[in-house]
Image 1 (cartoon, rainbow, N blue to C red):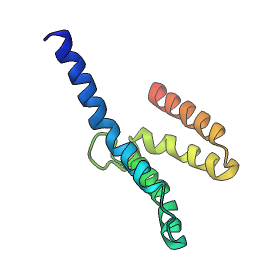
Image 2 (image 1 turned 90 degrees about the vertical axis):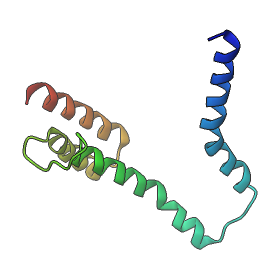
Image 3 (image 1 turned 180 degrees about the vertical axis):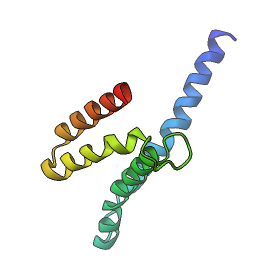
Length: 107
């Protein structure tokens, strides 16, 4: 492959990757949405985050595993407790990282 084809591939992949992120913002930032739509959209990000977290914790190898050997569940429990108690992203991340490191290396 020549230098030109590599640059064309990089530019093409960049356009395909960035277009779905930039176009909606560029198109819809000019509109004022009704309050009901704004409220509904405010739930999308937490719902997606919750779904991704559930899949990562309950099915880490691609299949649902709710056994005692699933270290992701054990690491999730103290992380969730700290998140609910402190509502601090910093403390939640620190507890999650430490819990995962402990469970991964010692159990």
